[in-house]
Length: 636
Image 1 (cartoon, rainbow, N blue to C red):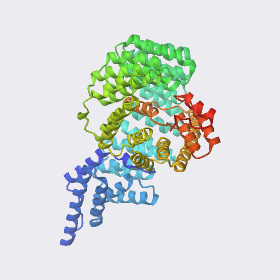
Image 2: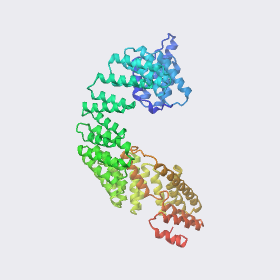
Image 3: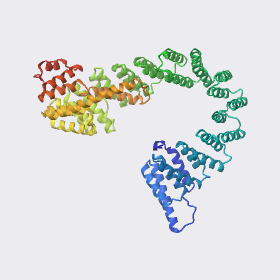
Image 4: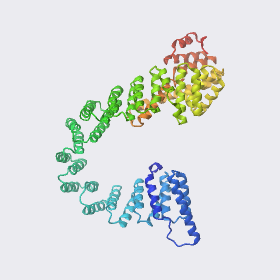
């Protein structure tokens, strides 16, 4: 099992290193010569430098310095453990390397068994790597060293239980004995009883389980949470009648115990009594004593379980309506309902719910962004832009609102408003070069749409000056140069650079082909357009496969934050207006023109027909080319 660096808790390592320094680590037990002492002092120096590197998040240097220290003083127990641990957390998949890493850590730990922290860490690592023998060995060493620490005894019992559950049943009785001894020390508790019951269940001793449950309950017969725990365990061992009795009793003992109310409702659901479940669920949601968070968690779990069950839609809507009646001032309810409606493909209804959320909590930026996203999903770009404009009043100067609003203003047919919005923004405040480049590139797109070509080229120039690697801006300016027969050599240079950077991007390839066409290099243009068409065919095939997969796959709606989604959607919508989106009418129109200039008239007509089938902006122009089987007089 690989244990990647992401599994490494920096808090742990920093604590370990701090304890190491505080304890004056790196002290070998052997008497030695002056040379040996000098070598150990040098190792100590390297180790301190390694700590500094780690705190500076320079992990490669940390590993290198740690290795140097160990090579100088391989007998030091602390270094053995740190080097072994580092070999694990850097993700080795080599079983021999993992084995050697644990050997080093155990060699070091045997010399430091009084170090409670190191023992605890070794327990954690052996558990993460499913090394149950090593886990038990560590637990026994710690129990021997710290016989009076209850948490160590508890871990020993767990290790015995794990060992039993992984094959050696003789450890079951040992686990039960440790848990029983611990109960004699600290008294009965639901947690220890749960562990004992697990051991009894593994031994298939139902009588002992029931006896243990009775013993646990007798210690706190008036405690709602104890009754709830007993009811849950009875349910887990297949005793529904007993489970319901204790769940009923838990609710009777404390009518405000939200966990008991919801657990009882879920139990009724598991038993197939949907009528009783929905009745109890509505009672729980209406209950003023039940904590709001518990209600929300219950509805979230209910939605997760039944979101694809069309027969439950009315029940879910009823739960939300009830929750909104009782907690009408909670913006989280409206947002949760909106998220549910969005998942049900009802974006306008979701946006309506977000109206309440933004009214109740206007300072929460995610509410505005999510509302705008819902309007976009519904195809109402003006409403999305208006929502973002309202949000921008709460967050002045935030480009997360400004850029998408401009995109949606343009998409709703008001490109002048989009230009005005960007022109009035103080772009001198944008300190990130990439952000400034995207801002200027978007402004260039809008200028070109309004036939303000000089302004567009100036804006693109500013975009590329801010970020010379803004390939989308480079592509667009190359295309527009080609369209206006301007600076074709520079256009070809830009197009070539863009394609070299992203050779599988059909938009970029089409631009390159069109620039070559405008320069009169028709055969080279045909080579590039052929590459583009091949990729479009491949993209279409992949899309078909993805669509088939989507039909049987539940998508995760929490993959991206609302800010990321709104920016992504805006970028996609803007990109759709850029030259030759994959499979677009413009791409096939270009292909037809290129093939015609290469003398392949039949193929050219075929591509023009495909362009016409994709709803071009000027269908009459393409119809004329198809009718006359040639590029008309007003064509380039």
